[in-house]
Amino acid sequence: MAQARIAVLASGRGTNLQALLDACADPGASAEVCVVLSNRATAGALDRARAAGVPAAAIPTTSDDGSALLVLLDRHAPDVIVLAGYLKLVPQSVVQRYPGRIMNIHPALLPGFGGRGMYGRHVHEAVLAAGVRVSGVTLHLIDEEYDRGWILAQWPVPVRPDDTAETLAQRVLEVEHQLLPRAVLAAAERFGRTGTIVPLSPAGEGFSVGGRPRIDLST
Ligand code: GRF
Image 1 (spheres, rainbow, N blue to C red):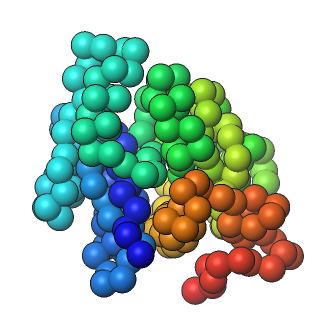
Image 2 (cartoon, rainbow, N blue to C red; image 1 turned 45 degrees about the vertical axis):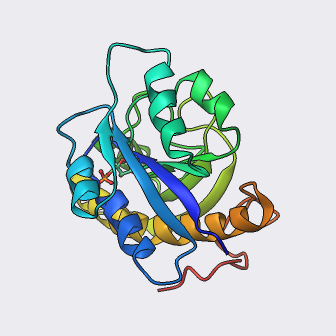
């Protein structure tokens, strides 16, 4: 089966990208990372891509209508686009060109604790302020709004009484590194068969508390 081509957009250090690159390096992986793009020329994610031999580029900032991003993406003909810590809203023109094929990882259980301004430590501070006992990781398809769209996979993470934003972020990040490659590769495998990303279960979730996981997320 042909490998699905994955483009990754990332703004920061790129540890989730690294988890995906490592998973794709496995012989028999259902996907390959074909390009990494960033809105920040100094993003660690670009260095990680280059170290793995993957084309990497900063998106020119002169255009905010998405045309520069579209040109770069189209050049690499991705089947699937993964936002791994990408802090800019994806322009409508890009969402429309790749409908139902762009997924984002978010460090909380959406639809809670998402939306404009909900990134990085802001997410974990809001979770702690709300006093909830469970946070987690969400992988979802994107649309024109921040952190909205069809949920593909979720994995819960406990919130401990003595957690700070930093300790919670670290525990969530470790789960992100597990969930992202598994869910992306599972989706990519289905994409190879169907030509479209389909939910990992009829409920639209790869994992749900009390539900039966459709892919093995247990370690
Ligand atoms: C992750 O927490 C991800 O969920 C969020 O941005 C962060 C990126 O971290 N969207 P990294 O750059 O992959 O280390």
